[in-house]
Image (cartoon, rainbow, N blue to C red):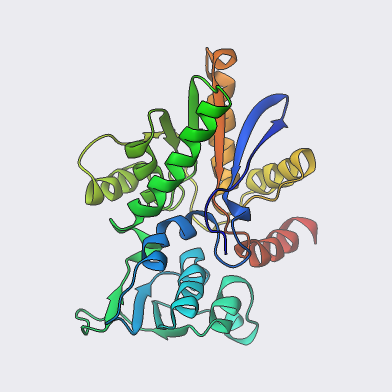
Length: 286
């Protein structure tokens, strides 16, 4: 199974040329930035481990990817959440539905403070130092592509949750890495960087207004649909829509845009669109 070497294609969006790294196409079950973050655990042997423990939201992309990883490795998977909406319990959908299908045991409780020797704890969203293993491979793919295609003056962009992928990409790439905060504010994102590294951080692009993670915004729905119409690529509604808003505005106001090339990292997460589309359709199309 192929979990590396995703293709890079050129697109035009609103008359601007971009390159897109299609990590969403790595594998139908194990793709995007989570495949990169968890690649270390996939490729290495853990003879003592029988169970993975993690936590987060009930529709997390990381939750789903961990359920796939555990299925592949033959591990049990306990996932802790603060709350599962009664509607989701009664009408399973998206990451929640498919993670349960891969054998996830979801628990509405606080994460245990201690773990057994046969249990592997992975922080929310895969914000762990081991993530650097797979992200370095991603960085090497980008460097190889740039060299082979004589791509100069490259700027790389990807939206951030914990910021782990952007952080390690900047560590391993000679190009500037740009990102924007999607889950918390910019200060939260900087704290996430500091928890893993002490310097050489990606550039955080400022947002025009404050966005609450998971809340519906018409402009996010509109840019999602416009991207699909113009590029025939489906992007994630939670991260990519805000990411493209920030990135496009940056490129638009960038004085030297004719001298630079811009690469967008498509990090997958499309299962989450199932529930997000239902919410957007109900709000704006009903």
